[in-house]
Structures are given as structure tokens and as C-alpha cells.
Length: 316
Image 1 (cartoon, rainbow, N blue to C red):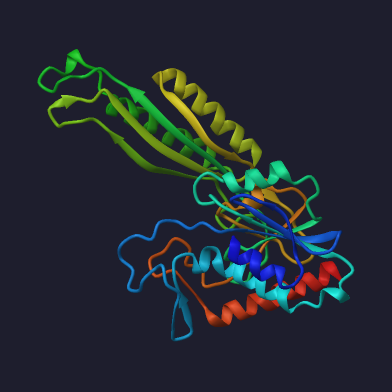
Image 2 (cartoon, rainbow, N blue to C red; image 1 turned 60 degrees about the vertical axis):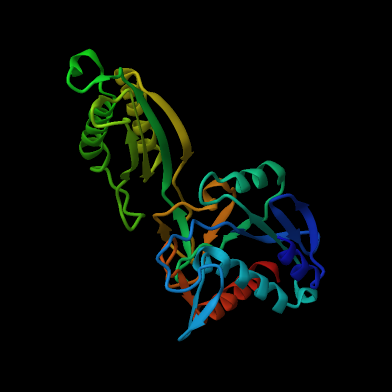
């Protein structure tokens, strides 16, 4: 954040707000905004390069977050440095956030602070240069079930929390296959809502009936109708299995077709929290969350040009 601030101050940008987030702007009126998160996912252990050092090799830039989404931030910084702001009638407002990968705390802080977002907001997530104007929604749950511990030789004395979780998931999967996946929305490349059981854990030993089990499940939803059906089903299963249900995130799908694009994203971005017209546009190839994450030098240069064209379109 300090580095971004120092770069923008050379172009007479003002600091409007700074915490873990940073908001900077130029001029008194803004017709365009840029949103970018500074955090990354974990590096993992299988990289062929040092993930914490940027390395260029055969026209590719390798490093943790190079695609998702330090390239977007780098490109907007370069773009605003190359613009002659004296020739622009309106300015740009830049929002740099944190915690996009897990809890969206940064963008929620920005939304709580900002009372006057620009009419068009550019989100620098990787899209391989395709402009996207919509995104699926997100439902994330942490669900836990209690049982009664007993020796595995006398399972009738206990209550197996893992088996209860399996039954919960089986009911949820059947509901998903018959009532959710069958509904489609052609605005999205994957036209149906997806469901993923991402993590499950429980029990303490092979010779004990487990008294606890928990799992995490998410849905990428196509519209609010499907979203409401899933929420209602989770509530019913919570009562049936006497489960504890924690809703981690609930974001609705959005779609804002325009003359510049009708393409949409199947992944979630901070655009889902924002008002007004939203444009998702970033570098490529899309290697977000992958080992040896990278973008091409050519892509970074192309993205700078795309951002400059948008600035000139909306700010001139």
C-alpha cells in the first residue's frame, strides 16, 4: 500500500482513505473507478520458481499473485501514469483492498466508507483481456453435526456424527441434482448452478464412534430464484439433522449487458459487492491459484493499453 501511494503521489493523486485499504483519486469528479485486491492465496510447495520473487522467463512473468491480481494493479498504475490528466475533464478513483481471497473484508470496508462511487467501476481480475459484465452468485456454508461418542465395538451406544453428515450431504446432493442443476441461465458459460463439497473432517480414532463432524460446501448460483431455493433447503436440512449452520457468504448473481460485452464470469469477484456499472477486465493467461502462476509480458502491455482506452473513454 505504501508503494502504491508513493507511485500515485508522483502524478498528484490524493489519498482519500487509508487503513489496510487504500483509496486514492485525482480531480474532484470521477466517472471511472478501479478496484483491485492486494492479497493472494497461499503459495503451496510445488513451484519451480520462488513464488515470492518475480521471475521473467521466455516472455512470461512468474510469481505468486502475478495473475490474480498484481498484474491488474500494475497495469492500472502504469496506465494512470501515462495519461495526461490535464486533458481529462473528469478523474479516476482507485480502490485497493485486502482479504478478497477468503472473507471479502477489504471490499466491505470500502463499501461502508464510500458514499459516492464513480458511475463505472473497473475490476482488474484476470480475464485474458475479455471484458466481462456479469458474475454468478455465491453461497458458502460451514455445517457441523454432533454425535455421541462410544466404543466402535458397541456403536449402538453412540451416535455417529460422520454418518449424519453423510446423510445430510446425500440429501443435499439429491436436491441439487433434481431441483437446482436442472435450471439453466444461458448468460453464463457454465449455465447451471454448481455445488462443491470442499472440505470435511470429523472423528478422532478408528475405534471410536465420532461425536463431531463438519464440512464446507459452496454453490455458484445463476440467479436469486435458485439462491432462495438453496437457502430454504439448507434451513430444512438444518432442522432435520439438528445441525449448526454458518452462512459464510451470500452474494447474488448480476448481469449488466452493454454495447461493449455480454460475457460473464463463473468466478466471484469484488464486483459482486459494488453498485453501478461494473466491468471485469484483466490479464492472461488465466492461471489464478495455480502452481507457477504467471502472465505474459505481452498481456501486461496489452492490458495497460486497454485501461488507457477506458480512461480516455470515460474521463475525457
